[in-house]
Length: 456
Ligand code: AMP
Ligand code: ZN
Image 1 (cartoon, rainbow, N blue to C red):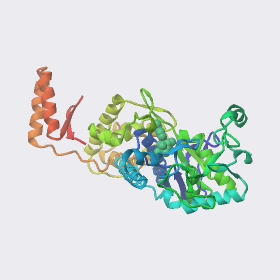
Image 2 (image 1 turned 45 degrees about the vertical axis):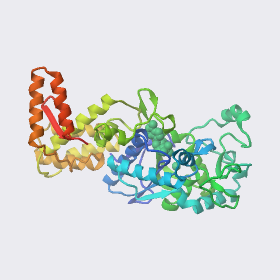
Image 3 (image 1 turned 180 degrees about the vertical axis):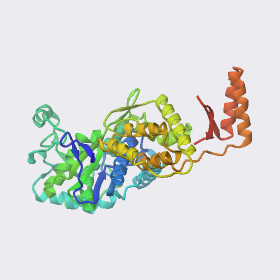
Image 4 (image 1 turned 90 degrees about the vertical axis):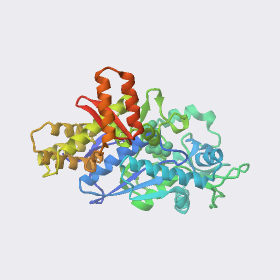
């Protein structure tokens, strides 16, 4: 089976063929760097990383571009409210530039800890103000813009198929929103360039042909994707929330300026939820990679948890599933390590794996093969080599895994704890668990006996 992907634009699974083989142009909307990324955001980046690894596994050269939104993303996606970066700067007593740098570096650390490959090109919105102004000018020349008191807006009624990606019911929206339109001509119109407010000094602002201000949130992606990948490229990704506003606006801008469709495929990752509902930076209920590490989890356990759900199904996070993922990853690492030196890859198993990843990235089923191959009577060397080949896509770092050498005094505590458990002296067993933790190790009870490892 050749690679098939679900394309949100056509709402169908299509065979993927690169526009300019062997290169594949991939653009993934990056973080808005006003706060740490939460593990929900990172679920989307893990899905995109899997896509990228599958493309590389198929032998393509992936040119992966990710933007960093460090200006223009306002509190409301409807072009109103304070700029998120400027707001964090005010609240944290830092400059907007310091905030952006700090959270960009935090994001880069987080993705490294989840073994997410770095994009080929990082691009920051504030480094591409010229390109964004040029794109707005281009859209203006084609006659798609109008000016209001607070900025230059895109007139979405000028495009026949505005909002096709989202299947937006434009007439219904128009009828429902008349009262809230303000100076906007249509409810779906959006800012391309915003003027700096007169009563508020912004830190990030630039001269432009229309007046001092800053770019709207959407224009950066059209401008930077065109610069690095051309106006029409292979695959554009983001989280499912981008289907309704951000991506239709990117498409509108690129169509207006270049007359092309922007991307051949549109892929969207579904959200991570908490038992209590949606996780959101602005909702203040978010969990970070750092939180996981502080609680003793290996970040790759979270990656494993994500791999267990298809990217187009919602995923609910809780500590029970994280614990289960953590145990499964530990067992897997021990299993693969125990297989010794790798030999030859088994072609039939690799073909089975390839079919599953080609089936719109069916990673849960591909991951199941890792366990299935373990149960076969193939040689340990073959199993190891084959699972290592799978791991090029899964990214669980199975090849690098080395069990920690546990010092004798810690093993002695573990043995004492086992004895206490046999005597059903749970208080003592817990004390010994704490003593093991103080020594920097943790013990997990498995059906095969206690498993001891260094704390993450
Ligand atoms: P932001 O930093 O808010 O621009 O979002 C970065 C990425 O995370 C975008 O692709 C969003 O669609 C995605 N995203 C936001 N919240 C979630 C969530 N709860 N689960 C999965 N992806 C999310
Ligand atoms: Zn974008």
